[in-house]
Image 1 (cartoon, rainbow, N blue to C red):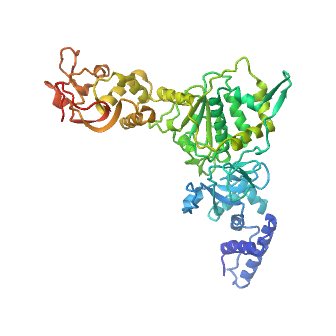
Image 2: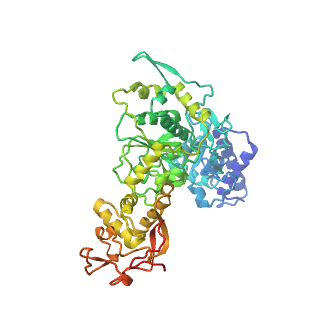
Image 3: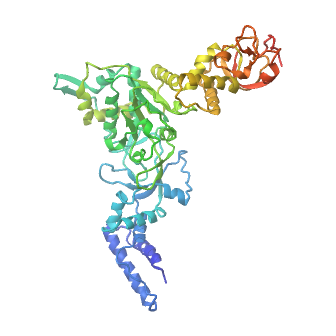
Length: 569
C-alpha cells in the first residue's frame, strides 16, 4: 500500500507518461485529480476501518510541483560553462536552491527568452494558478519549494558573439540570424528587430525644413576616433556576452554634450525593460540589484560622484560577470551572474575605496569634448532616436557592418582620461608622483620611509579622508611601478636590497625633515641638518639603519656608493 504523498507524486508521473501530448494545464489537473481519487478509493477498499485514507478535495501541491517540473519551458537557470566544453555542473542541493527559476516565453514581448523569477507569487504563482485557479499563497509557496528540487537545470548561453535580438538569435561571427530556441538560453534580449536590409534614413525636419540622417548625426558628435569609441560602446551594449570586463564612463564637467542622447539611444535600441539604472554608489546597497536578471545593460545618466562609494565588490563583480546575490524585499535571494554593459555618466571622477587598482583596470573613460549649447537640436533626443528606422539602422551598423570586438579601442583621449582619473582618485599614485622626483637616496624603504611619509602627507592634504593600511599601501606602490605606462619609471620594486651602497647617509634626503621620518634621524643635533641629525656612521648608523629593506630601488643605481657609508656588501 502507498502513502498519500507517494500517490501524489506517482500519479502525475503516470499521467504524463500516458498523455505526453496533453498541453492544457487545467485538463492535466482534472485527469491527475481523477486518478488520485481512484487510487485512494482502491487503497481504501483493502484498508481496515481506522486506517482508511482521507480523500483530497483538490489537487495537492506535490502533484502540481511534479507536473510543473516535467514541463520543457520551466527550469532552474544557472551560469553557463565559460570553457564552452559542455562540462557537466555538479550542484549541491543548496546550490540548486539558490538558482532562480526561468519560464521560457513563446509569445509576447519576451518571446524567445526565459523570464527569471524567484518569487512564488509572481509569474510562478500565475503558472500554479493554471493548475489550481484558487491556489492560496501558502499553496504557491509549497509548490515553489517542492519544485526547486525537481526542476532540470539549464545553462545560460555563453557564446560571446551570440545575442538575442527581437526577431531571433544573431551569430555575429558568421552573420546568421537563427530562430529562437529553448536550447539557447537567454534571460533578456534586444527589443529591436535586426533588419539586414536597413539603410541610413533621411528624415525631413518640419521645424526648419532641413533633413537629418544617422550618419551625419554621428559625424557631428566629434572626431572620427570619438565616433568610433561611441559605436564600440553601442556594440558592447548589444553584445552582452562579449567579455570586455570594463565599465564605461561618459564624462564631461558641463552639459549639452550629447551624453544623455547617446544613453537614451542605447536604451531605445535595447528596450526599456532590458535596461536598469543603478548609480555607482548604489551597487553596494541592499535590494539595488533586484532588476539585474531582466536586463542586458546598466545605464545611468546621473551620478553623485561626491558620495563616497563604500564597498566596490558588487560593482566589480557585475562588471566582470561574476556571481552576485540578488536580494528583493520580502522575497528569497538567489545567486546570479550578470553579463552586459555597465555605462555611467559622470561630471567628475567617481570616488571609491578601491585600494588595489582592480577598479581602475575595469574602467573605460570616454571624455565628451563637444558642447552643443546654443545649437541644440532637441528633436533628436525628443523624437528621432525613438524611430524604428533609426534604431534598426544603428543596430545593423554595430552588429552587421562592424567587426566583432571583445575590447574597447584605447584612443589618446581615453588613455589621457584614465591617467587623470588615477592621479585624481588614487592618493598613493598622487603621493608617489609628487615625492619621487625629489628623492635623493637610491633605496626608499617601504615602511619606515614610504609609508611613514605617506601617512604624514595624507593627513596634510586629505585630513578628513580614511587612511589606508600599510599592506594596501604597499600593494598600490608595487602596482604603480609595475603598470605598463610606468615601465620606464626610474624606480622598481625590490623585496630585499641591502641598504649599504644604496642609502648614502652623507647625502641629504629632503623628505626626512619634511615628513618627520624619525626612523632615520638622530635625536642629537648635527651641524648643517637642522635640529635633528640624519643617520651617520659616527653616531647612529647601526641602530638606525637596517641591513636590508624592501621598497623602491632606483633602476640606475649599482649599489657602489663610495661615500662615508657607501661601498659594496
